[in-house]
Length: 320
Image (cartoon, rainbow, N blue to C red):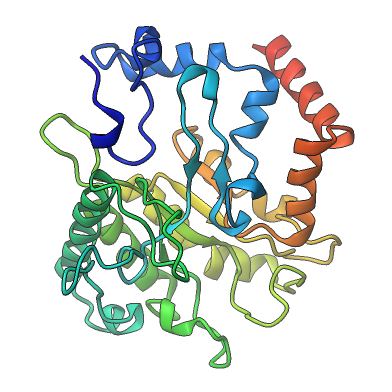
């Protein structure tokens, strides 16, 4: 039995009769087996496409990937803001997604039940808007469709009152930010009777992202102590206690380096390394111009980067 494409939620695969014959489309099989079947069918170029924003599909800020047409897998857009609400256009007059008070006000309540309930509302509305085939509120466009990956909560540290995004943050204390994020994510990823989460929540912006001017081209002079004591603990706590699905990673340099990129110093503290797990996913939200040029270069003229990716792919296969 296949679901008609016109009635399917946004970005659903396995809708054609041909695609439904693949193992990865068989919902009765274990997830691991379905994923293994799907990955085994992808060429290396197709794997690269799934981690590379495609500018022909829309803003690279929103992380559109092209999908795999031959397997019946549609394109996907990763980024939907879920910090104060699900960023969406109103479904009809006076029927809009909930908008909560600013995170700093929510944080000041010190009310963990409130934070959990906020997450539950976001998860339910994200799933509903995806099921309704609805779209973001993105400058009047109707092509930025809503999936099930939400970027939020934002748990950067409010240090400088001049930082233009302080209103997006729960506060200046890593412990407060950690518990706020954990409760909110537990609500967002609430599971139904079949065990499926309402949505997948991505913490942002990993990490040390506390300046607005010249973002994407900036170096942050942060001591090792401050990085581990202030800028990383809230992420570690949220991953361990709420099993957040991943992190949206800004691309600053924590120490001097050019071009701007996630440095080894910070990258070693990603969810994979810090928590010895591969169940989390780190992605670049709104890639910097340098990163965009790399992604586009790899799509249009695959020289150095793609050769390096292929060498890493080959080495990984040998190691396995």
